[in-house]
Amino acid sequence: MFEALLKLLARELDRARIPYMVIGGQAVQLYGEPRMTRDIDLTLGLGSEGLDRVVEVCGRCGLKPLPATPAEFVRETMVLPALDERTGIRVDFIFSVTEYERQAIGRSRSVELDGVSVRFATVEDVVIHKLLAGRPRDLEDARGVVTKNSGLDRGYVERWLRAFDHTLDRDVSSTFRRLAESQS
View 1 (cartoon, rainbow, N blue to C red):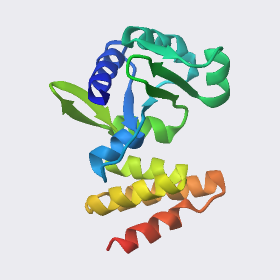
View 2 (cartoon, one colour):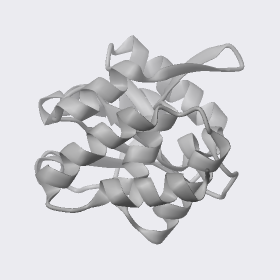
View 3 (cartoon, rainbow, N blue to C red):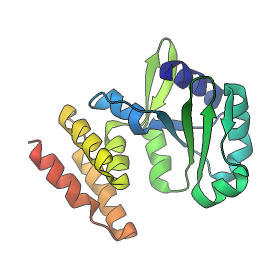
């Protein structure tokens, strides 16, 4: 179910020339511990001005945008949630505006799923996303990804987390250091 939808989304986003990367639970399954996830999270390489293009992709993929007023919702949240009514799978299209997100999309890696190339966030960027989200499930996901990927570029992760510490006035980088040290 998820794999078929991921392949369809990848083909249609590529066709629309919308850069993207898979993040969230689907990426955690690629790099970390298998776990149940009910959705697909995609970070897009465009801002909310690209909403019409994303709505067209939704139509070609058979997805129904969930907000009654998508433009207003996206302006407020930078996310367009949509539903594949056949499977019940929710897809969150996350519009990007930061240098970090655009760089992460550029770093994303291609994973072949039955002959279809699907762009996934790198292991480092999955860890960054999970630590920034900061919920208990996200922290557990980050721990599992770090544990299974001892060769991850810790310097890259720490550089970005320190930048976010300053921007968000939070101390996410020390959370990563504690997590990484506990895996050594």
